[in-house]
Length: 440
Image 1 (cartoon, rainbow, N blue to C red):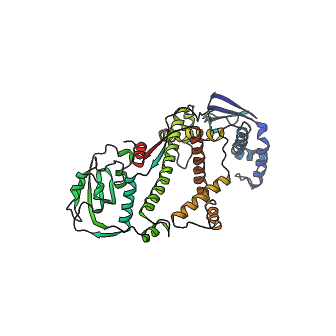
Image 2 (cartoon, rainbow, N blue to C red):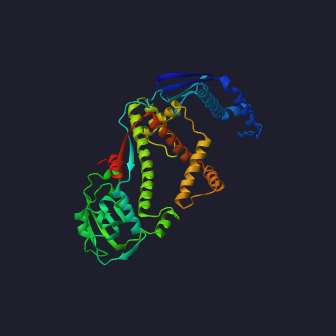
Image 3 (cartoon, rainbow, N blue to C red):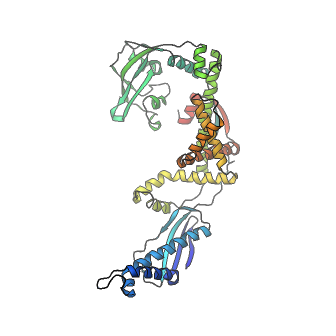
C-alpha cells in the first residue's frame, strides 16, 4: 500500500491511499473459504456450491468490506504516525465512478489541520480588572431587605408609597409574562404614582422606557433578555395580585444569630461589615468572569490564524444524530467558530505557560467547591471524610468531571491572564460595574 499527504494549503490536506491486491487478497480468500459451508445457490446442496460460484455471489461484497477494513486501519495508523493534529475527522472524497475491479484502488480523504500560530499574552491591551466595592447605598438597601424579609408582612387594602406588590407583568405581543414581587419605590416616580390607591385585581399599564433607574432591572422583573433591554419602549400591564406593607424586623442578636450563626455578628456595624464582605466576595467572582471574557475577546481579535472553514462545514454535515444540510452547516459553523478559535488559543496558552491539568487539580477544585456549597447550607465545619465521600461521588460522574475540568482550566487561565496581560485596575461601585459590563 502506498499512502501520502498532499498539501493544499497550511490547514488543508488530502491523504491519498493506493491499495493493491496483495493488501487484502489473503483476508478475502479466508472469508470466501469461511463462506463455502454456508453458501446457498439454487441447484446446489448447502455446502456443495462450487468455489467460483461462491466468489461470484459473495466475492464483491466481501472484497469491499475487507478493503474498507484495510483502509480504515491504515488511515488511523498513518494519522498517528504522522502526528497529525486534526480538526474534525478525515472525510472520504466521493467518487461516483469508482472501479472496484481496478488493479489499484485509490482512496482520497480530506483533512483539516490545527493551524500553527503564536499568542502574545503580554500584548498591549485596554483590558480592565475591576475591583467592585459595596457602597453605603447598596449596604443600606441590603439591611432594609433583610428587615423586610424577616419582618412581618401586613396585607393592605390599597397601594401606598412604601407598599410591596406581587403581580404579573405581561405583554403578549413581546412574549412577556412574569410574576414577581416588587416595591413601589423601585419604579421611577411617574410609574410608581400610577399604582398609588390601586387594589388587588387592578391592572396598571406602564412604559418600559425609563421604568427603573437602571434599565437592566427589566431583566430581573420582566425577564427581558439583555439584547432587548437598551432602548426598549413598549407598554406592559401589571396585574396586582397582592399588596403588602412590612413591619420591619428588629435588628437584634436573635436575628443576627439566625442569619450568620451564634455570636458571629453582634451589632449593626458588624452586620454592615458582613454584608460588605460577602457582597464584595461575590462581586470579585463576577469581576473575574468579566476579566476572563474580556481577555478571551481580546485574544480572539488579536490572534490571527486561518481555519479550514470549508472542510469544517462539510464535516459538520456528517456528524451528530441529525445530518445537516449545507445551509444548516453554514449556520452552525458561524455559531461555533468563535468558540473553536478560543479553544485553540486556550490550549496554546496552557502549553506556552507549561500548565497541565491533572487529577489532583480536579480533586482539589472539587473539594473546595463542595465545602463552599455546604457552607451555604449552614454546614461550616464538615469532616474530611464527609467531604471526600461527596467528592468521590461527584467525580464518578463523567459529565460532572467534564464540567469541573472546564472550570479548573478557566481558573488556571485566569491566573495566567492576570499575570501576563497586566490589565489596568479600576475600583468601581456595583452599579458602575454593571454599566461597564452591559453598557449604559
